[in-house]
Image (cartoon, rainbow, N blue to C red):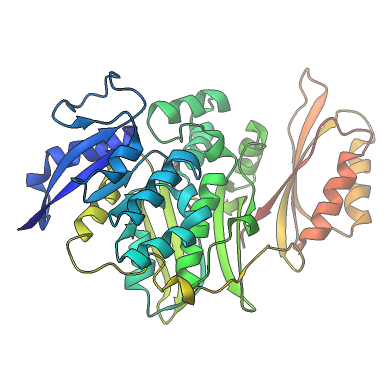
Length: 427
Ligand code: HSE
């Protein structure tokens, strides 16, 4: 076994704790170096984390850990695209230390500038844990598939959202309760808004797109939509119509541009992504000459994500550093572009809450006919005592712009009581 790698671990949340456990049990792993944690840093020294950290130097200040002479590898598990995480990663790289991080926001928003420092210093900047938790997709796309012309990457990249969407349907529990459960189980970000708003999945798809398409990541061009306006009714009614809602992240290359977005999407119950449940992630990679690959597994949680960090640490002694995004930063193209709705033809799920009185369906029908949108399926639940009837429609194929114009029209109907919902149905 070659020389000992000395780690400085900043951040002792779920992933940090998982990593400490793996290092403490390293005899059972297939490593080529002995690992030694020399120092740790976190917000609270005294919090009970269920691990013994008394043998490690405690650093109140993560920067002192990032710069310590006895640290070979700075492991950044603080999170966030700015502030301490960014400052310490920059400083560690400038000081010639390898950096391993699980921080997708940092890599998606500042990956290129950090990769430049890593290249200049000849050190590793590795971030397998930033995308899809325990699913080894970063290295697969960057290294194993470097000989494949990738056309599209899509999938479920946020375990918390997938857990919420499937658990709400299966247990009938309300949204807030399921979000709390996801936090307790260690799936959610410290601020679960990052999960449900789609930001977390958007960061991850931006990273994969940069690697897959040799593009300089430009997070400002990613269109982000999450699950925070999905209601219990959407989940229930789409299920009655034979679909499952999933938060999809997608990156496509066409016409020399790379377009990335996240959006709730409906899948027929037998579609592979409809079958992905709980905090599981699934990534579909389509390219030539491999066709379609599917990688699936636990996308969140202490153990799976820590195992990805450990995989990066294990890589450090296996040869010189390679470019973090697969090619040198000077070779990354500035081709991220904003997705457009034009030309996107699809079937659509529309849900509206309409006053339960005579003439309501006629108003709805006028709105659809006015936009020349044809209905494939329509169901209405009883208004019961509420006086408001939930109605769900599956349209025949039409453009996004047309579907959006129908939604605008429905929102202004006298019978409409709140904002209608529009979700794309995957072919
Ligand atoms: N909060 C993330 C998720 C896990 O739910 O997928 C870390 O990326």
